[in-house]
Length: 146
Image 1 (cartoon, one colour):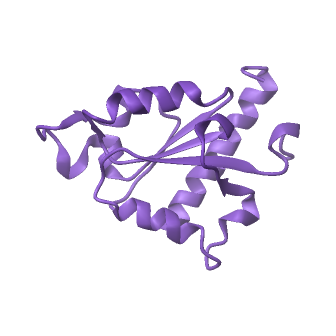
Image 2 (cartoon, rainbow, N blue to C red; image 1 turned 90 degrees about the vertical axis):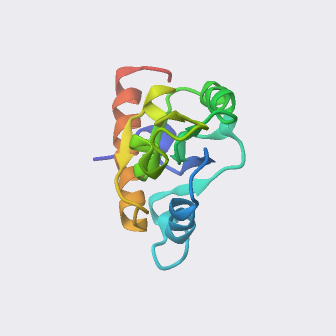
């Protein structure tokens, strides 16, 4: 199955840490190393959400990150996909009902792919990004945001 015209070269990913323990962040960095070689799928990190196709988010939403996460989501051009990595972003994990936690990511912005684990393995993170490509591919074919 061929990728659409806009995703044939690279899928640009913007990583957002919303207040996690950094375990998943370390695994994301591991996924970018030569051992896992995420670039073979065209996955590349970008420094700005304005150039991103995918938001890769770790951690629960803390009170200070709530407006920032919404702004980052709005700055990301359509079509876009949101991937939540780890249990903290999915359910607030060990930070559930903490005084400074608003909740999981899906209570703030729509989520397309969940990557389970605490922390998530690099293979699972790469698989999540590949699933996001499939989501973007269907959006491109349907003409949404393209």
